[in-house]
Image (cartoon, rainbow, N blue to C red; front, side):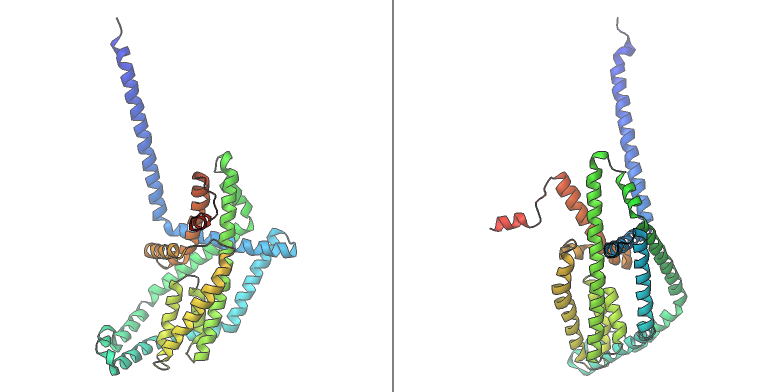
Amino acid sequence: MPNVSDQQSPVATSDAHYIRRLSTTVGLLLGVGLLVAGIWLSIHVWLAVFAGILLAIFLTTLSLWVRKVTRLPRIWSLVTVLLALLGLIALAGWLIGPKAADQFSQLADRLPKALEKIQHHAAESGWGRFLPQKLPPASELTNTAGKVAAHAATFFSLSVEAVTSLFVVIFLGIYLAAAPDVYVKGLIRLFPLAHRERAGEVIDKLGSNLGNWLLGQLVSMTVVGTLIAIGLSVLGIPLGLALGVLAGLLNFIPIVGSLLSALPAILLAFLVSPWHPVYVIGLYLLVNTVIESHLLVPLIQRYAVNLPPAVAIVALLLMGKLFGFLGLLLAIPMATTFLVLTKMVYIEGVLGDKTPTGVATKRKSS
């Protein structure tokens, strides 16, 4: 006669197996959830780490070029790059620093006057019947300036925090650039043996694309800032040097940076004449649309990943909404990283499609 416990053992084994699988699944989901929550709560730290990695890639790209030209060891090539960058920053600060700082302080004083002049001009013209109602009155502008002065302590504390984060990013970038192979090899060892060679190719491609993009952006920022400063000075717009520096710095943020840098220049142009804003708009369109978009950007994209404009706009909107100005700064390099990973890991690795971009479309159209 069979034992009752022996008849129930398959059912009990099945139940235990199901409970074990359920517990494992729930544990994995909780672990992933806690990991995602931890990353989200410390997202600004990870953004700073990403910024440090970008700086390390930039320094490594420059040091590799110096090493190729001078045959110096890696560490001495990096030291040469750091000394050259410090020298350039010190030279720029000595040549234009005091004047630019003075002009930036004047910029904060003249913008309310420019808005007030726009109000008076609008009131005297035909379209001034409705525009003055939408613009803030001069008394409100004065009150706003007072509020800004009253919150100077808060602004200073935020500035200290920003400077601290900047130093963390700088030192992290220098440490990573001093021994990149140590960190890259350590990262590759996290992958299975069969995929380590491909992981190394992906990391090399990411470093190459981001390094070339950063160098291209540096050239673009310098050219745009110089041309804007010269153009505004020729047009007789006040504070041309400060506006040129602002245009160069904000040029790091594609599309949005050009619009943000143009607004104060257009406002100050009203202090000269009602027609000068039109000239300023023409200058910014010439520099940012014709010279940058048709000359500099194609040159940058020859050596870096070609990021579609729609992807760039979505990245800027999403990162700006989630993380503010820091998100805007890192939106394009993060979108570039995502695009390279999608192409090399998913399209080529998972789907097995290694067709060069545009070949399929060209064949179809022909």
